[in-house]
Amino acid sequence: MEGEIPNFVMVWTLVVASLTYCHTIGNLTSPGKTRLLFVLPVVLLFFYLPLHLTTIFLGGTSSFFLCWLANFKLLLFAFGKGPLSFDPPLAHFIPLACLPIKFQTDSEKKVQNVKKGQKSTLNYTVKALIFSTSIQVYHNKESIHPKIVMFLYAIYMYTGLEFIMAFVAVAARVFLGVDFEPQFDEPYLATSLQDFWGRRWNIMVNRILHPTVYEPVRDISIRLIGKEWAPLPAVLASFLVLALMHEFVFYYIGRTKPTWELTCFFLLHEVCLSVEITVKKAFRGSNWRLPAAVSGPLAMTFVVVTGSWLFLPSLMGRCQPDVMVYREYMAFLEFMKHVGDFLNVSRLKS
Image (cartoon, rainbow, N blue to C red; front, side, top):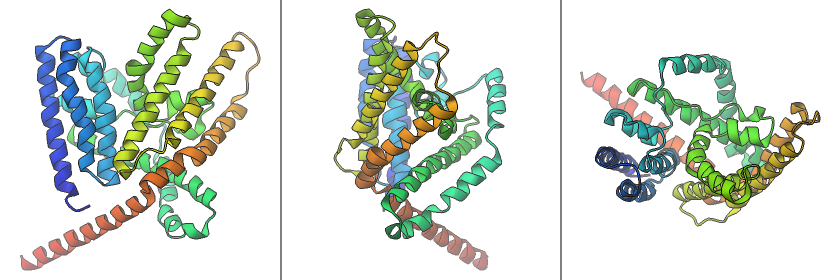
């Protein structure tokens, strides 16, 4: 962890410089292959930069923002698509490229404010209380059944991601005057796999994958197999890219070779999601429909079981996030203690 802060500053200084270059390229070139050739070196650089960071909080979030969000947005930008294609000023271009934000119109802000009211302080308070038990579980995990530990870690992963995104959202609101697009919409309330992956889990990633992967593959598939079945290969391609990007992020965090459980997890969900889509098509126009009170719990049970079987073991084995989070938490407490001691000494001297 030594030298992480200077490396973090160095990485994001290069990010700002690279995005300034991309903004200039956008003013000098037209969308297409020429702009893509100029943008590709930055895309490759953004895959490389997270290797200079080793912590889960700085390195993990940076790898997500750079090799995932920024790179996909830059690829869209190269072809005149996506949020960067509307010629934003440089001060907007840089945060828009690498953060899950959107500069909203007044009407969109009103809608957003209505939605914010739906997620109350009580909601976050309950999640904070649940997450606060993670330290005790970590210290006593040897005496808890491994499957229960995995289930609890799944809950901590979700609540932890919510809090990280909430913290970054507050920073974006204070320093940039913009709001984050929501990343999660209470995924445990999903009524189907389609609802979970399409509308409730990692919403920003879905919005990026749709124009970069889903739509191009669907358009090609329409010409080959027709409009009705074209979504199936598009869903397959989206889940393959989703799996690959998770493999990248896990490598950045744990620095271990892929074991491909992650890929199996996403491919299994792709198959089941395709079956779900096919069944819905088969019963379209029929009065028969599985009640949400049944389909929702079935979908979430499937997510939890497959996550505990494939996703979490890969995460725990390759990255040991509980160990990393605890170590970084203790380092942060030690740092804050030194800051407090320094301020007390300064106050006494004055």
